[in-house]
Length: 601
Ligand code: OXD
Ligand code: MN
Image 1: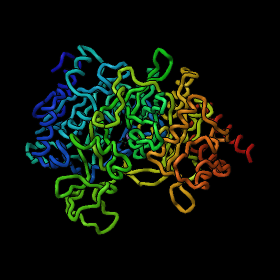
Image 2: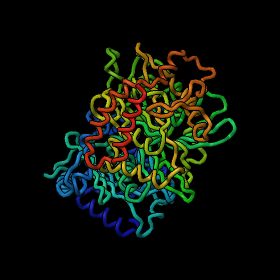
Image 3: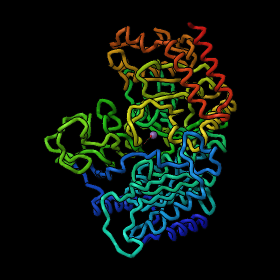
Image 4: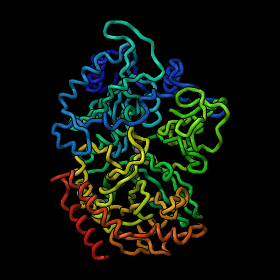
C-alpha cells in the first residue's frame, strides 16, 4: 500500500483481473534484489556465476522463442488509426482492451504480482517522470532494479496524488489453470505465440503480455521512456529520443555534451564509453540509450539519461572494443543468453579469449563448434549492469538539472555513400537528415538481419505516434530554440571500400570525429560546403598518429553526386508514406537537395 489512493486502487484492480496469490511492493532494497535472484535460482531461471569470476552475478537463459523485441507484436492503440501512422502497428483501443482483458484474466494465478514504483531519471528531477510496473516476473523486477530507480523515494515524490504512467506486465504463464489444475513453474515462462506489447497514448498506459525479454518486458525502457514519453514530449514541448549522451572534454578542459541517435545495436554503448586515441581528450558517459531533453531557463536543451543501468548487447563486446563496458559488468550483473564456461564465467563470440574446450551455450547445451551458425551466445544476448559501475561514468550523470546538449549526431550502418561525418546546414536540414536516416537491420529485433531500412532518428520502432507529426515536433522544437539548438551532424563508421574492408577503424579513433564536432560547435574547424552538408576539409580532421591510406580518407569524405541523385526518388518514396502529415518544410528540403545535386553535376 502507498499513500496514493489512485495508485492503490489501480493495483487492486489489476490484481482482481490477474488474480495473483500475493502482492509484493518493491522497496528497491538490496535484500529484495537478493530475494528476486533467490527466486530465479530456485526455479532454475538463473544460474549463479562464480563468485571469483563474476561476483553477485547470474546467467539467465530465455526460451528460444523469446529472444528479442517483437516489433510485429508491438501496437500503438491510439483512438484514431491515423495517429499511429504508417510505421506503427495500430489496434483499436477498445478492441485491444477487450483482448487484453481476456489474456490477463487469471494470468498471475499461483504467482506473485510485484509492484515496482520507478523513476525514469534522477528521483525528483524536473526532467524525470515516474512509472509503476506491475509484473509477475522476478527477472523483470531484478532488471528494473538495475535499469531504473526503484522504491520508497519514488513513492515519496509521488506523494498522495502525483502522476505516474501505469505499466502492466505478465509473462502469461499462470501456475493454476482455469479448471483449477496446477503446473510447475519453468525456467523461462512466457506465452510465445501470444505476445502483445501494447501502448495507449491517450491514457498513457502500457500493457505487455507473453514475453519476458528486454524491451518487451522492462517497461520503463522502450515502452515508457520512448513510446509513451515521445507522446508526452510532443504534448508538453520536450524531446524523448533514442540517443546516448556523452561528455566530451578537450585537453584544455573545455566540456561539451553530445547526444547521438543510432539504431539498436549500432554502437551507442561503445561510443558513449569510448577511450579516445587522441591524447588529452576525454569521453565520459551520461547515458547509452535514451535521452530526455527539455528547455531550461537559458533557452537551451538540457538532457538526462532516464535510465540507471545498461542493457547492452554482449557479443562483440570485449576489452578492445569497449573495456569500460567490460568493467561495468564485472560484478552485480545479469547476463542473458550468453555462454557459460566450466569455471562459472561467461563467454560470447568475440570476447577477448578463445572458447574453452567445454562450454554450455545459450540454449543450455554442451556447445559443439560444428559450424559458424551455431553460436555460443545468441546474437542479441545482453548484459544488465548498474551505470554507476562504469569507470568513465560522468560526474554529472545524475545531475537532476541535466546536461546542456551542444551537438546531436545521427548515424547508422551504411556500407556505401554516406561520408564519415557531415554537419547540417541548419536545424531544419538536420531534421531532414534524421528523417531520411537508414541503417542495416541488426539482431536487436526479431526479423531479417542486414536489410537496409529507413529508421528516422533511430526511432522507427519507438515513436509512439505518427512519424510525420514527430518530424513536425522536431521542427517546432527548432523554431522554439532558434540559434540555441544543438548543431546536428551525421556520422558513419561503417563505410566499406570496393574490396569490402571497413574504411574507418572506428572505436577510440572516433574521437577524431568528435574533436571536429567539438570544434565546429565553437565555430573553429574548417569545412567545405557540399550538396549534402558541410564536410571536413582534408586537413580539418586530426589524423595524427593514424595510419589511414590517403585513398581511404578520400573515399570516406567523398560525396558521390550520382549516388545521392539516385537516393532522391528513394527518399521521395519514403516520404510519400507520411501523406499530408509530412511537413512541407521537409519536402522542400528534399527538393533543395535535388537542386544542389543537379547544380553540382
Ligand atoms: C535496446 C534496443 O535494447 O534498442 O536498447 O533494442
Ligand atoms: Mn536502444
